[in-house]
Length: 231
Image (cartoon, rainbow, N blue to C red; front, side, top):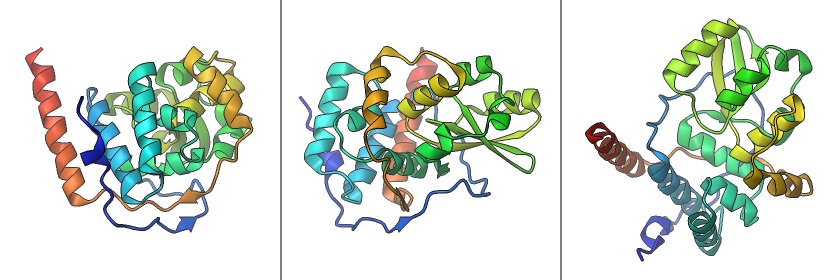
């Protein structure tokens, strides 16, 4: 069995300074990753966490092993292992996607007037949670960037430019249950209840992935695209 250790090597950097979480008005975005990009995103997330020593390597390995056995998202496995607070995880996922994070409170306390702007069917289908209006932009929480065509379609249907804020996948499930009454996936139900009794944590500043990691992920995405085209 291949060891994840090469991916998890520490790079000698210290933990980034903490900043308060907020929606803000920045519209920073990047193109969405390819549909077959979960493997390289997993590698990038573990590399960022190890780079900043945000999570002990043994905890990352435990989460990776749990993901292999149980399936699901790596972020979910990290939370199940209590490897890091939820808001910290969201900040690292946001850094990978070049967007801002949203906090647990921002998602769970979204204004009802804003929630009414997105019908339940659209929120459930695309796993998004409306958070706020910023001018002509509708800020939504999602666990990953939306595909360009989906973003354009939603913008047309809702009459707003769609701007994504990153949160972990289980938080989207919790928000859909809380605000829309959408039943959470079985794999998330116990974790949602567990997270109720945990501190969400601060929102750290996370430096973007370094150039070498970005180039590595770009090469991996090209390989995935070629493989997908072959099929």
